Length: 178
Image 1 (cartoon, rainbow, N blue to C red):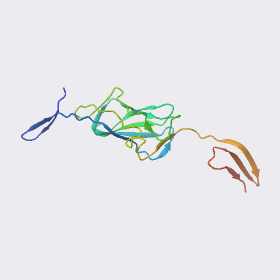
Image 2: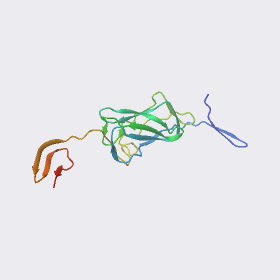
Image 3: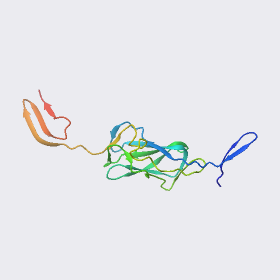
């Protein structure tokens, strides 16, 4: 049995059929601009136009390189206007600026997202290049699980200094035994 919302005062009863459906306004992360490694957790917040109630475990599909990752709802935010999804960076993931795969990346996964009146939320996300998208926000959340590679092409010793030449170095490494 679903009843419309009602408000009461001493002398009157007002019954309202609330039909405004919640919709996604923005997707963001409070993480600062940086490159995150395997094992690190990144919270992704989905903000709705009104408070929502969640049942089950909705998912958000993130663009994380060769293998996209479904991220489960973290059971945080039901009853508020912001739901949190927690992504754990996995080996092999890579992204210069973390984002979801498309406007349809939010799925119910057998659960529900509804407002207090029982209206199902519209799950459409902002376009991936929109300022309200995860990548469109003010921080750049990069994923970098690629190990650095270094190759040597020459090792020289002169005047008690060993100089190693190659690629992959931030600076030319030297050892000085002076």
